[in-house]
Image (tube, rainbow, N blue to C red):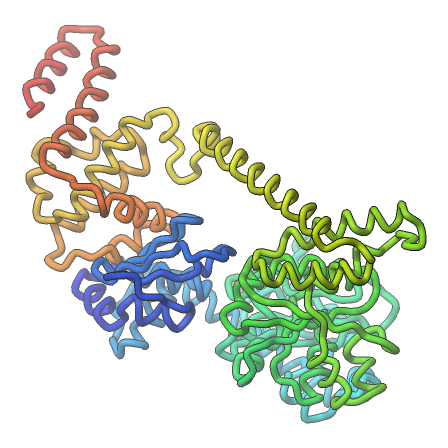
Length: 580
């Protein structure tokens, strides 16, 4: 069942959207509203607007939008009921019963219970295993007992069903174990996923165990296995050890390549370290990092794979507005080995003297070239021009131009001319591509409202009517005297109008939040966009009458095309009588 309008109204009063959002993003006052860089896509110029008067937000860049419930769902990766629960706790409210929401929350809670019991099982196996295989491995890597306890490290032996049988004895069901990702099911048989591995529990920001990583203890492959996505875990949206790193007073994060690197760095006294979860850095993780740090020091392995991952991370972090610096290891292949060889003090010096991302890219320009030849030097300078043309800040760009000019003994004026030409060409190309996107936009399928391209005029009328009711909710009865959901041509707008009419007729305190349980996050973004894009448009009764006539005309034209009998003709005549 849906929550009552009174409860939603109280929930919204206790959670002003600007107050909630400023815990996640930097809000800047812009007149009556606020703006911020959108946390749901990478951008350098703020395109997300927060509207305190309607308690909503909308990003004009990516189309994300909605109310405070939608925001919490997206930013915390929560289901609707979970978002309601979090906001209710924040406002000190008791939540009514919602059966569907309770079911979803119960499944996730069950997964978290399984994960907690699994972590305890692995930890006990590590400390009680007679062979001490897991403990011996961690000891060989220099991991201290207090660190093992801090991270809840564990061990999974070579059994196919020991964990499964243990969890079944705790009254969990086999299908729940598969849902949680700790067991697999093949041909009707269920068996343990993790075997012969040391185990690394993955925690969310609240300290819940949401998944696991396991490292093989022999030469088998794959070397690492991670929990697949579950109701409690999305690996592209989480970072290992962020639950510890978020408490650091530093405004920078160290980005390491794997579990052992993170643990070694943390054990050496650097709390502000995280790692991705078995994948290269994703745009979602980069945006998550931007919420906790202004600068990231990339501490990946020095091998080819590590260097490729570094290049990708630099670009993603830049798009998220985070400055990147690079550690260059000498005498070691990774942070773990470096700390063992040279100690924490030397590692701190390495961090403090880490090089900027631009210098890293400039060095990469030399790869595979013989700089003692004119051909090699020219090719290197061409690559450098491409790198420096990507620097947005002119002052910073000129500093690097001066540096390159001296190093390669080339005129700074010529170098600057080449870079300016490259920037101008890119700007012209971007504008041309933007125009092409605008011109060709109707060719792309609208995933939310796919009928828009076939009925642009009717869609405009439908959105205008919806926006008018947002602005004038007291006009609902007058509008519905002349038009019903059946007059709407596009299915999405029809649903929005139908739900909107229902909520307006049954609620004394209408807010956008009353729609949150009926629509997905992306749909709420579209609805908020309709309201946001009509804010500066004066929607008079005459304008709305014109919109209504557009939909009546379409309905009647459709009917006239299908007149096959006297009854059809009489129906058309009656409809025409009802048009204002």
